[in-house]
Length: 399
Image (cartoon, rainbow, N blue to C red; front, side, top):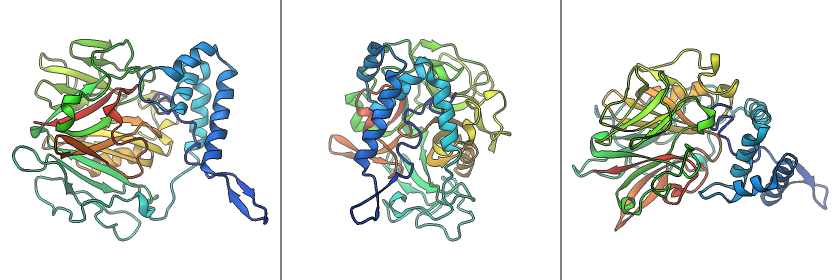
């Protein structure tokens, strides 16, 4: 698909993690679900058989052993995409994700963030999160900002919350993070495989001397081959930057701007990093039109925008704060809606699909820092980016 993990960035066979397991009968005739272990084994066997049916075995073995964090399924499906099966995987993803809409029930209790029982009261310094939806009363702490790590000025450098942006599917939760850019520094790190044209300087991980200063770590965008845009880091291009593409731009003062390249943002001596990913989905505080149509593939491959899946987005608000949103069961429209509800005036989609969406806030603990996932249901380790990763990513530190 075009979206990195849109259909192009998803590194998990659709349904392998979320579909209801087939039923079997026990000795007494009752139906029993297959064990999680049996389902994983069956899935992995199917993946291997599919890979072996079209491969040079050496190429597949290399994909399975290439340095950097990635699961067996991530590596295998990524290999399939790179070896002629991209269209097949895209078709399977579109078929599955567009037919498995979230429920109209309230969220499962274990999916609701429970930390910070005393939410902050609304102040003019923070956007007022919208909580109106068709599900009745809001959940406890829904739309309420809670504070995280403090900056040198004694005030929180990060705030988190959660909202429900889909009136039709109130089971969908979106985690929201707001980072004060005046007290933080942003960094972009190249992975072992993305954005390609490597190797890049560094270890594809948060530098060890930065861990104690961590404020947040989060995923970047689609794979390079799934987008037309480029990547720039510390004077080096992976691919040329493309006019009009949604771009996260980091300047030497550690500030991130989000906008369309050579329209809202552009190259200057102060720019140290640019990560492009499709087109903007929010501009001037409003959703871009026709997100559900995706004419010309502006937001990835056909029908990708309609998939109910993990999605993430990045934007900035009117005060220059950085806004990150993410959740499961989102279409492109509901992702954009979540950014608007969170106060973003400019916004872009980042990566999508299971295992590719990851955000952790960090709290100091002695000479270390401890991570907390934005949503308890987020897959993969909250400390994912402390080890070498195959994908590029962002991290923020306190000044």
